[in-house]
Amino acid sequence: MRISERAERIEPFWVMEVAKAASKKARAVAHTDRPVVFLNIGEPDFTAPPRVQQAAQAAIEDGHTQYTPALGLDALRQAISNWYAQRFGVQVPASRIVVTAGASAALQLACLALIDRGDEILMPDPSYPCNRHFVSAAEGTAVLVPTTAEERFQLSAAKVAAAWGPQTRGVLLASPSNPTGTSIDPAELARIIDVVREKGGITLIDEIYLGLSHDDAFGQSALALGDDVISINSFSKYFNMTGWRLGWLVVPEPLVPVLERLAQNLFICASTVAQQAALACFEPESLTEYERRRAEFKARRDYFLPALNDMGLTVPVAPDGAFYAWADCSAACQKLGLTDSWDFAFAALEHAHVAITPGRDFGTDQTARFVRFSTANSMAELQTAIARLDAWLNP
Image 1 (cartoon, one colour):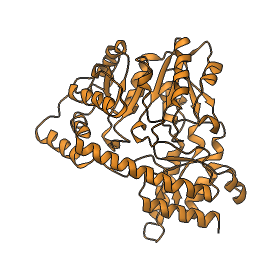
Image 2 (cartoon, rainbow, N blue to C red):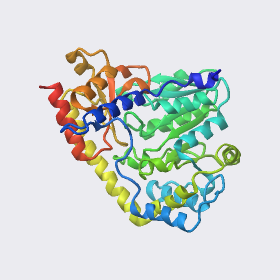
Image 3 (cartoon, rainbow, N blue to C red):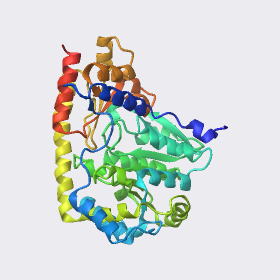
Image 4 (cartoon, rainbow, N blue to C red):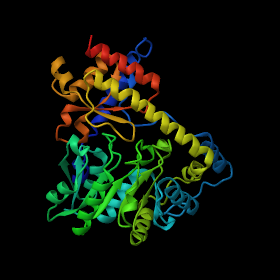
């Protein structure tokens, strides 16, 4: 069977290889006193709050399960618009909001609408691998631009200008970022957008972790910087609805009918039950619970980062959002006689029964030095993981 060139261009998602090994190890040690602690997957341990679950049940019982408009329920688009105003002080008309089948569908729609064969999109190295594959699936090329800790592992305006070439179409950013949990300094982001505008390009920014910002200096939406900015967001992370597969885009008005046409043909609409449930996300009771959970994520970060640093797994830039720690394991590798973070991840699984993600997925520049920890687990599990890792690394 001949496989398309498009499919062949998509690299393996290496974290899944680690996940398979972790699942195998978990089965082997399930009945021991050292079960595997999974810090490899970026999924909140919280599920949708009670009001959201009740709204989903009511939608099913009341028969509100048929197709919605391709752009999403009008009431949900308005609720998202209101949330931007209340949480971030940004006025985003509901008419510019497109509800999608998760942030993945949002990225796919945006890339298909804006990228042609041969177009290049600048992205930071490191960055989330699936984002560059959406560019590739649209026949474009993701150009990874190396970043440093001094730059918060984010692109700078100077680097965007220097990397811009004849085929460059724009930039795809993420703030806060996966895998680093770092955000772009607002002043630097404004300068990046100015560079892109001068070049006649597009700015796409993944803001799916924006609700989980822990620092007011960074917890601002790029949408405040102009109506030409395209923002991708999701109900998965802050709203704890990962498997519900619901997200959204905020786009310039002229792009809305284009995305509507694409969505009608490719998806018809996002899940109706998920949309009905998501309306309850914005009720006061739910928002209070989300803020309580956000504080819990921050408390986990504040415990976990110093503990990693103390044992020699240095986090060069403290994450200001999301629930990740991007830790340099090169010193530990040298101490243990390991080659790189890939070997370190499998060794941690074997010796400490802790599953983590090696840097291989996230880019090519120095990523072999880093591993990503997810701190989306309970405090008890994080404490167990730290104790085991420390006992292994510093016997």
